[in-house]
Length: 295
Image (cartoon, rainbow, N blue to C red; front, side, top):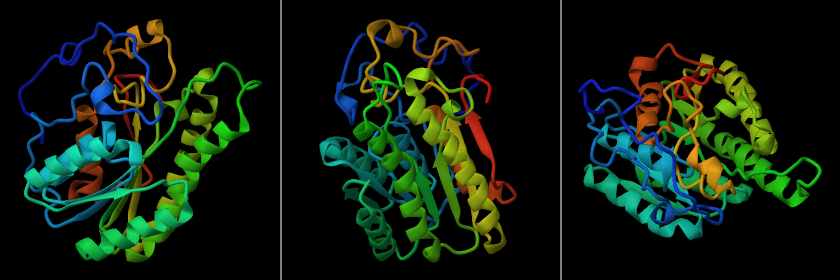
């Protein structure tokens, strides 16, 4: 787990905004200023996931990297997917995983392709001998001027990345999962408190909540738990790649009760909890990590 020292959450990370910057999708860590904190120096494991086998989509950077590092330090082998443009980030995440003394399996490809979603499950099972934890985390968002100007190609990209890929991957994974396994979906505060500039992204996040609750009912009798984490404003490469202007970045996260954006490392514990035996009676839940923003 993370350090047990008590801190003031309003002062734990900078609260004075972020500098103007812009990236193409998908964003990368080395171009993100300041560099997000994924728990590289702070997360301390206690083998709560010893001998588990995990697959994390979008595990190369941001929240996915934080979860990968935490899972590895809790004793789990970790497979992670990434896009070709994210090779450097994926290599770095895999290095951190291996340093924890467990296996890392980077998987390059596009989750919008149904065949790739099936392939990543098969390769994980072949390499690790099974699959116990599936984290459906990969996502795409872009700032929209208006619904009127939202291009169909962009709508397709958002829906295929955020919804189709999750359905395809879960469908392929379920036959390999046994009682005690866990599926965790990264949804968003946007599912409950949507911004007009993220209308299509927010729609997919709301749909994910329905997916979590429906699938939890289906798989609960089989002993497979399905839950979600709803992040608020978290500083990841996705943010400078969203297309926001300098003022939006400067104030990013400052409208939360805690008064700042969160860091990926601050979500890791939620994913560890939901995958662990501590959450054996937790299903169909949406765990908010939002800095106090309401769902």
